[in-house]
Length: 375
Image (cartoon, rainbow, N blue to C red; front, side):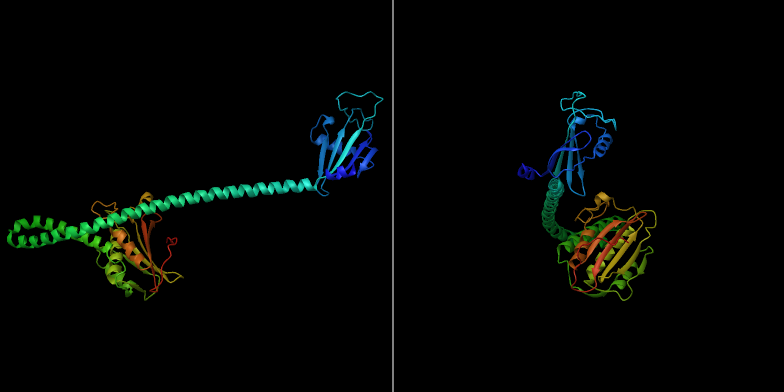
């Protein structure tokens, strides 16, 4: 019996009288059973049927105590009832028995703890697996979208190359004929010729931009002064532009001079044209961060760019302007990235847009595409 009890983690079994005195015991059981404590436990749990028994767990000892009343009588001292197993009130001659069993609950306690730990780990692993699957799905979808986009850009680039080449020759012929007509036709027709000439020049400018986009983006880098480049561009515009030289002087960078001028001229022009009928309040700030990167912020108080268009704004031939070509920002980013930098646009607080150009000071440093300072 003792070996069977050990296998079942039973430390002791006892049968007691209604006063709590031991009548028959096996294993480790107390001689006097504290019935008051069990009765108080019954009342605290609002139990009405004593025959069902009650179990308590001692966290300090790790033991489980089980108590069950087998018959019902009235204790003179306390007035507590005890019920027979069949639910009948016993005769006054019967003496109620109390069954007491002591279990070693540490093993069960640790099983519960390990089961809870396993459940938590399983839930975390399942959640991690779902997150991983979702991340793979999202990355795959983004990759396929980028791949499709690159394929369209390649096709578009080939078409643009052919188109630019085919348009340049007729434009050259039209320009020559316009010059001859301007000499031969009377003065009153020159106004109409000026309109034609203006549109021809716009087409020539567009084909030149397409050629710039398709040609070698790096060019011939050399050391140039960033402040001098920006100041020379500012002087070509009729509006007031404030240049803030936070980076100190001189601000030297390695960049192809023609491409540098094309980048900043295009970005400043966009800032000035960002609104109509009011001052765009354009300002340019040059900052150097701890990584020896020049950050050029071009700010305006224009109409801003809708958030839904931010992902498309650098796509070739995408434009929101009536007479825009949609190639300017694409060229700017391509030239800057060829030099190891980057161009970003984001909304300005209280209205407007901020364009950030990041350029490395050192000639052989490449900018990792990181989050903007958003000044």
